[in-house]
Length: 80
Image (tube, rainbow, N blue to C red; front, side, top):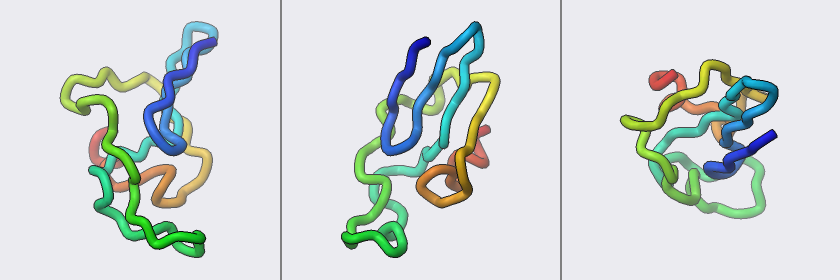
């Protein structure tokens, strides 16, 4: 098993010959409002995506754990 953490909940899991994208959040840094009901007022995502989406090879599978903006966003929807 191998896991590549990209940011927040977004990562790529390789297991048993499968490559799975988990909770894709592809928005540019600080473009979204703060997480609702969180303890701070910081915009999200907090850091830039460490890969270039134009060259990033998307895995064949995607797992979205739940439908909050910080686990699946509009940028992910249009890029998948």
